[in-house]
Length: 87
Image (tube, rainbow, N blue to C red; front, side, top):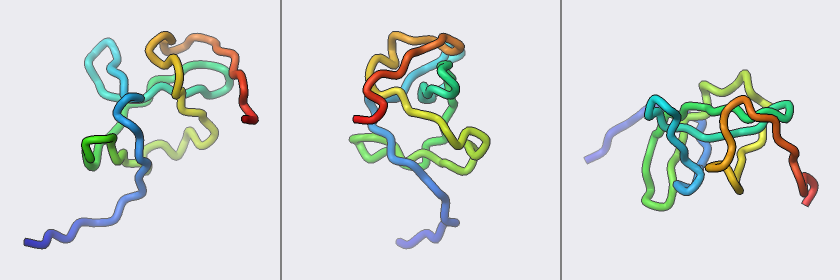
């Protein structure tokens, strides 16, 4: 069977980086201007090792950094210091 779907821009995110907010929404934590932001995500596909996430809805947050270590220890709105930014 073949199903043609429209093309979407997407990011691959490891499943270990996915978080839930207080309302149970699935998302990721990122840093923009030294503050933690929780971004809800739209999962396109689950590979078993991670998720392909629709990137079209996040155009207003072009310059953000995905928190890859310690994301479970920070909360939205918290100020953070980014270390090893150039490694």
